[in-house]
Length: 90
Image 1 (cartoon, rainbow, N blue to C red):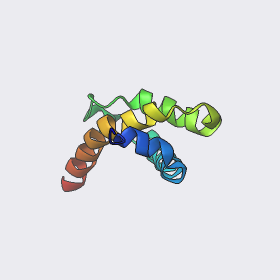
Image 2: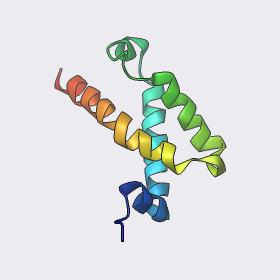
Image 3: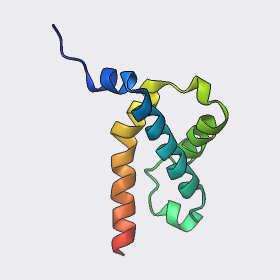
């Protein structure tokens, strides 16, 4: 028997998914308030994609794709975390 993948476990855990989506919504709102100067310090972060995804979470939450949320958590959040840590350390 194959072990369940992390994505499968995330998909099956509705409470964790919903909490993750809510946190992504909060992150999006905070990012939306950053100045353009701050955003220019991290051109590798897809700021508009973040805003667009946050809007989808707020207005089309019923269409949220679990694999997209998982991809953001795995691939985008580490970059964003690194940027935030670097900015805090300044």
